[in-house]
Amino acid sequence: MNPENFMAMTKLDQSRAEGMLAEKYGCSVDEINRMIIWGNHSSTQYPDISHASIKGKWAKSVVDMKWYEGEFVPKVQKRGAEIIDARGASSAASAASAAVDHLNCLHVGSGDKWQSMGVVSHGEYGITPGLYYSVPTICTGDQTYRKIMGIPIDPYSAKKMNTTEKELLEERDGVKSLLGGSFEKIVKPYNVREKLRASMSEDELKTLVETEAKFTFDETVRVRMLENVKSAAPKPELTIVNEVLKEAGQPPYTKEIFDLMKGNPMQRKKATEMYTEVKIKTAVSKLSDGQKSALRDSVKGKKAFEF
Image 1 (cartoon, rainbow, N blue to C red):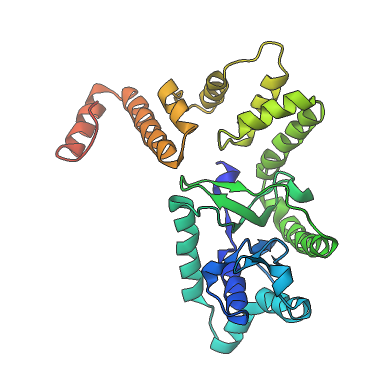
Image 2 (image 1 turned 90 degrees about the horizontal axis):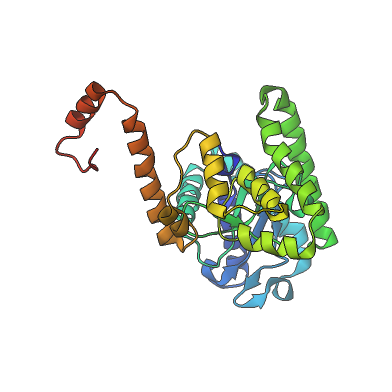
């Protein structure tokens, strides 16, 4: 299974942080932007306002930094525990609301608003590859996310981010023996990709960035794209994607599906629906005549494609 399809939910922590800022500075939550939760969903998480805005102003020019470091950060980190202590039960309603918000962002989109999500690291910001770590993302509304890259990190933030990463590594190592080969499947492609990147010229890297920006790729395709850029005889992008699909036992993309995958969220949604139909038809084609007849009877009168 694709590691990119698994996420840890830090939307609840982000919502709590935004709510505290809104209450403190007399505005609505909608007027708080680019609030980030880095790291673990625990008391080491780092609620970062370094890139946030409040009512259109840089948060650090508005927020009392003594309050921020001495009260805000610890309270966001420990808010869940405080609720459990006060109620004798977890904050189930808040978590459920955050889950709805998280899925809404994935399926509908978040516009240009940053959303914190615990997703698999590929080494961004120096975070250990293969570790699930909360970072800022943009959701495009096609069930995918894109990490916000290139954010400058100040020394205070770096220290906080390292602390929460250390805790996550300790938690991972505590169960690493139960993970089997799955951990290496995440980390190995990243190592291969970084070695290839290091050997690329500036023009090759530019070509790669332009290519990767078109799609949400899994690591296997990313590595193939890297290799293709450096190849003496580059293959068409569609050929590379279809080679990976074939190795995974999946039917190929048609050119129409491939072109739609490079479009806007609605076009990508249409492409996903079309490809699902291709996969079903491929599976049906492998059935015996008797199995096909039984399947036709089971879908009779229902909305279904012809086969």
